[in-house]
Image (cartoon, rainbow, N blue to C red; front, side):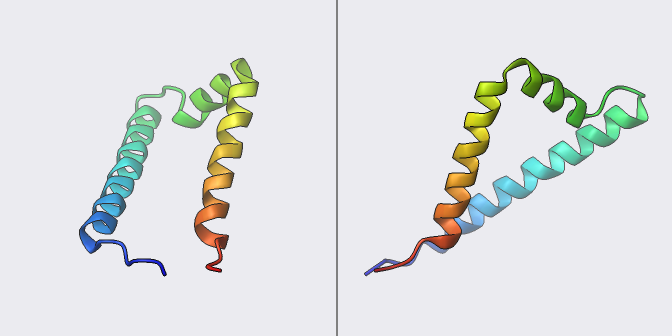
Length: 74
């Protein structure tokens, strides 16, 4: 039987993810205001330079999401 995750750990992970997304939004806003290429353009250039690594990261991220959301307890 699965044990319940500690509440503090779940809150910590949620806060870290939220703060990371907030930092990305603020950085993108600042780049847009200063007429520089946004973060999406940087990611696109990086993915075009390293396509195999970008595909591998997408597969790992998709596998993790699939594992977290579709895992069944047997």
